[in-house]
Length: 531
Image 1: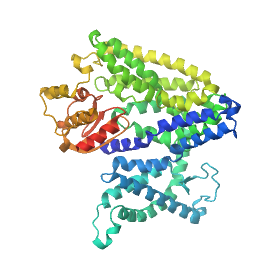
Image 2: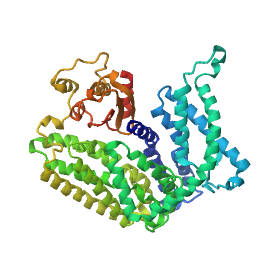
Image 3: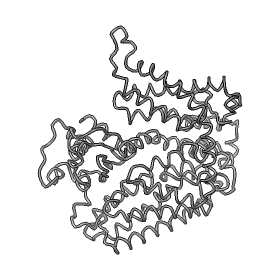
Image 4: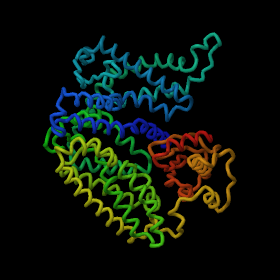
């Protein structure tokens, strides 16, 4: 079950990778179409405004079509065969599902207590929304994932069904669609009977979450950090950020749509967009990680600091700019899990402190995302709040540094640079790795392009996982190669994975996560070529 949950979480992350660029476009577009920031040249109706509005509208694509993106994304990571065809089937059946719902509500809406004739006027009304031009129930990401998951099951079950030659035109994706078409009818009936009641519960939960205030923010951030070792943090924050748990449409979409209003007001951001408080997971990324890195450096053995610095600089910059923290967190997660728990606690405290000072917004990623959705478009009207943010954040960096330094020295945690073996803080070459694995030389894999470092790394990782005969399946999230294996005893330990040039590995039974970094999609591509 854990393997399936982790694989689902990785598949969920696929469309999220598009948000960074889309966020930058929206942030810049909003800035240049905000009259209070740019001046009269940005007034609505001017040539300047019209040109930038074209760019801005293109940037909205990702956020306005989130359900469709998640429908397509899930088969990419979860379908066991013919992923591309599974994506097409998922889209068609999802649209069919919504057409069925629309027809049912048009015919029996009043009996179900739903006014299907309500005017949406660009927003959700009476629990309804528009998806690809279809007026339907607003099931958000849940409906998309439910239908996509059902399609994946039907695809894996029926895609290879053998039909008589004279029915061959109905085989493959067509047969999956035929079966799915009739499955969507009861699914749509069930949706119109159950989902309106779910919507009422979601509104109640929204009130509860918002009522928890600053403490609720801290609990949310703590859980998000502490679930990282299990790869389940995506499942915690995804409904908050991209679905209707806290605000209609998800925090990301709602905040992005509200940017012009926020830019035109000088009121506290907390009073203008209180729902955005729960994206406070990024504070530990841009302020906490530098403090951790500094603590590692000063507590390292003097003779190891130069090598350690070459490791710490890139992984810290990655955390600060991109919001990808696994590389630095996995350097100490397994050697000092108590430190990781402290890290999660400090993350929650910093998030609560920011919230107490009224600083909210889309702050779940790194500095690039924060700048595009917060500092750039809102700096002119909320600059003093961001100055306060910077002061609090730098104080947080100092707290991380002193707390980590104290705990490392007090309990002699073997964090990077403190190991007995100096080689633990360097990245080995392929030749060195082979000579060090289990203390023996390993024969070179045949047919490997030695001039392609990513292929070499993929080959090393495959060997470390026990070879291709030991692999059940593979997928990835933003930074990790997620692999299920047949025999976990054949998998080498974390130290050997680091020796290859990765950031280590997390083992949970037969489920292995190799921490690669942002280049993991290319590594996975080569890994699958080797398989």
